[in-house]
Length: 277
Image (cartoon, rainbow, N blue to C red; front, side, top):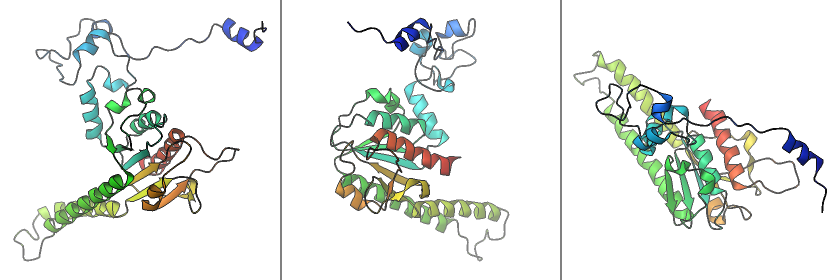
């Protein structure tokens, strides 16, 4: 019989850990005497609240402002607040267990969408239910994803060009010179800025291969689709060939790569550091 490790013995004797309580208890317990917000007759009625959560408490891994809210209400609020301009995609040919972690990180950084290429099945345990609040789309092939993504960007560009044409007044127009002109000028500036962002949109492959540039020196565009490969083989040749840029994360240890979930987290945070802050 092995002698217990002294560190293990000391850890057990330390009395730790004491964890802080996460979430809130039942509404009646946390807000005694206050009317329930799911009661239509209540002065603080709010349709976003979930009756079952109000009854039992809300211990979910959500921000405090979303306590007791339904899943649909949280997802709609994230959309209304505005998700960020980047999207992430992962090739699922090896049923990568990192996908759940990637979805969770995408939710934390308010990614526009998560795309899963290949088989529909993936390990949801690592996502901790965050896939419920995130837009997750499935694609049978990398070609279908990228072709569709580029078509979507092209459609947005075309829509902006139509808007810009409608906002351009000829000097002979009866409204030319009226008070509405400054408003039109501001709208034109906003539409031109959206056009610029869309025209600079790029597809970025994240992999360590010849010709890739270090992420530390790469300037992420505001609208982009980041591609990540499965653990081990990395991205498929097709994914790399269809990307506009190839970027790698500098590493200094003995292994060739970090896992896909970690790589996605690093890349998403790089976008946040450059664009959202």
